[in-house]
Image (cartoon, rainbow, N blue to C red; front, side):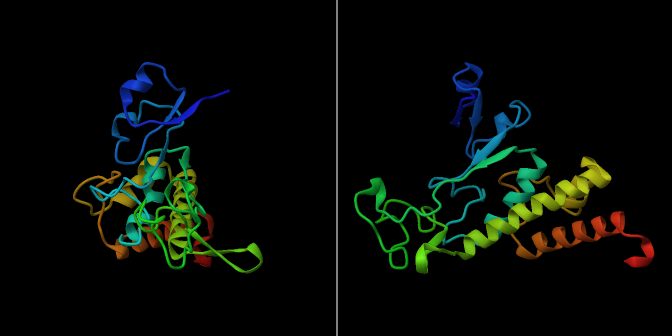
Length: 199
């Protein structure tokens, strides 16, 4: 059985303390290219250097850019924290997520849940969850495009016009850029799979 562990110090992985480290996205650089089937995550502490996260105070592009990052760096998985944690920190008491968004002051608003309690136990999706879904759809579109034109050409499409390569903390802070990348990817996919006269 493989041992997975949220781990942000590369030295611990080098010592063999876990088979599969899962570094947070603000500590992932030393792990890139050195860990097979690399995963990443974010939670309550990833708020600096423009790394991806989903806090209420963050613009949606910080949530959605994750799909491009997961694709570029060949991440095999994403460790997701807190789907419906409707409690104060340490689960000391339940909270009303419509009125309290920070686990009773324990975490940044938006960290501890991405759904709200709906009627008959059905979850109400937050905008943050919908944006995260779009990020995963972006990743899947890039995987499809890569299967058609290769990794290098797909990466060139993403990084076209950028002053610096895309990283987990460096990317344009502009939602229009993300939409443009997706539109260009969609157009390229269409050009590859549809006869030219059908486009």
